[in-house]
Amino acid sequence: MAQQHPNCDGVVVVMVPLPAQGHLNPLLHLTRVISSRGLPVHYIGLTTHIRQAKDRVHGWDPSNNSNIHFHEFNIPQIVHTTPPVNSHVSTCKYPSHLLPTFTAANTHLREPLGVLLRHLSTTNRRVVVVHDSMMSFAAHEASFLSNVEAFSFIVTSAFAVLHFVWEGYGKLADEGNNIDN
Image 1 (tube, rainbow, N blue to C red):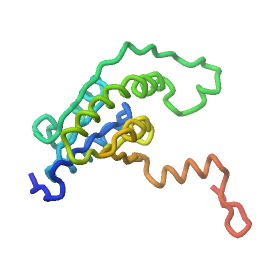
Image 2: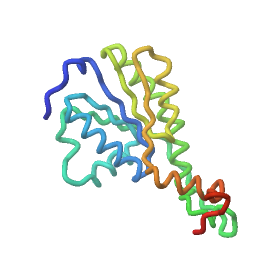
Image 3: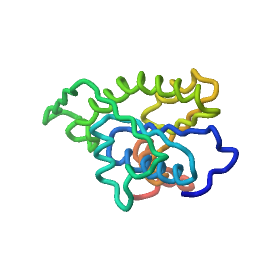
Image 4: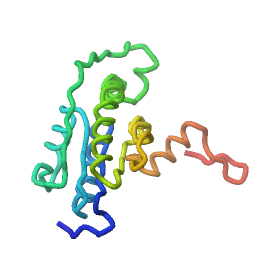
């Protein structure tokens, strides 16, 4: 483990990922990098999803790092619905079957996160919250405490964002001409 910088005494990091595989893993890997610098990191989420992320990670065992603390929370059972076959939703490539899980996480993780932040803020000089951009409630919870600050982590690449903007707002013009596909 790397030596902790003296200015990092009393600093702790809290990770709040969206409960989807493509969002859990990047924040878990960032957790590893931050913890390797000697900072304690608290990774919170739904029990099932934290276990999945820990099982799917390759090349290291998250349970063997004493600077990483997992906070697993159970929530009420989620009722998943299947969209009608002929609906507009069925033509969309977005995995809409995951929306109830995202909604439940946003609803049921708010209170435990608030409790954790209040506890950490009384025992640490500075608390840094790194949350998935789709878990913005974490920034709201952080805003109530003077020594807690939040940063949004966007797991989508800049190229993917450009693609969504390109498709959503229409093709960009190049000297008055539309750019062909």
